Length: 331
Figure 1 (cartoon, rainbow, N blue to C red):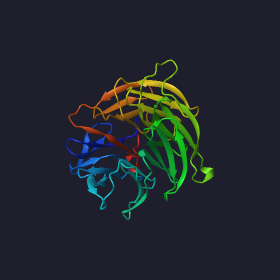
Figure 2 (tube, rainbow, N blue to C red; figure 1 turned 90 degrees about the vertical axis):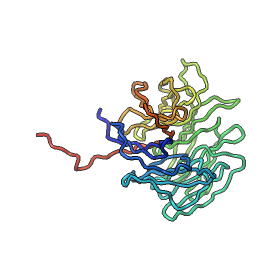
Figure 3 (tube, rainbow, N blue to C red; figure 1 turned 120 degrees about the horizontal axis):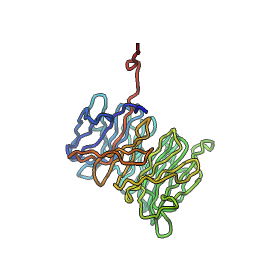
Figure 4 (cartoon, rainbow, N blue to C red; figure 1 turned 30 degrees about the vertical axis):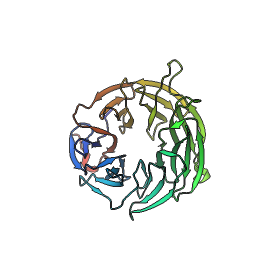
């Protein structure tokens, strides 16, 4: 099957630049430098796919937000000082961003007007993941060797709270159907994921818990996995759980909330990004600071970048949509 053309936006920590890369050829299209005194904490694509947002922390501890304009191939800083953004997500339309700082403070940022609103600071809890859809903001928290999923309205009103059986590491939305929360073990629980089903009929009330799944098939001996990220194609009912410590990927069937198979890579990865229109995925690694290509259909590692560049674990994939100018006629 022919892969839809795409580009990658990658952070190169050696040259302190955003790299725009041809996904199929691997060639660098543009290098967009940013000031070296800033450390990126995330990289997210805008809804119109024309720019990327990069929250950063300055060496003095202050936060800021940079924008990479993919059409003009340049980077600029937005004119607002932020709390240090340990967690960051965008609303679907891109007019709002949501931020968590190291002390657990939550904030809403209105991007067009550059206005920041503080939502509050939960006592003795650390936010370890944020996600947003049109109706709600989903946050996961670590506190007292346990975890919580807290759901807020776009105005900052707490809508629901759910206890988690372990310590959460992230929260991911699968289209408008599921909330996926990977978690690590505690003294009394195994590692796994929580799968919530989003219910639109109850206004912004998000979900009821449907299942908890361990990370290994029954015929596999479990070991510490540390599930750090989940990738899921919006058009498919399959989720890929990245197990950073065990260097593997657990494949989950979301329709049955059960394990389909285990992909053993024998190489640690941190995050997974599915290439549009394919069964390929690009993985990042916080440990090795490189990228790898994975064949999800056949469950194997295909290639690893061979470069002296230190590539941070935050990337985004930009699909290139066909236009009328791309059509050709065969005679």
